[in-house]
Length: 59
Image (cartoon, rainbow, N blue to C red; front, side):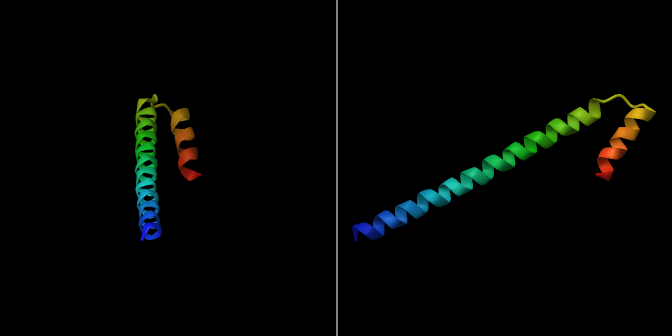
């Protein structure tokens, strides 16, 4: 009985941890995407800049 309980508990903790990890990774990704968007939006628009942006997009 005890062993079963502990096994269930370990599994539960593990799934909770996985969920938390997934969420944190998603949060980091959205944060980075926001930062990138603002960075690209704030750049001055001139021919050379467009050239570099196009190079980024082709990669």
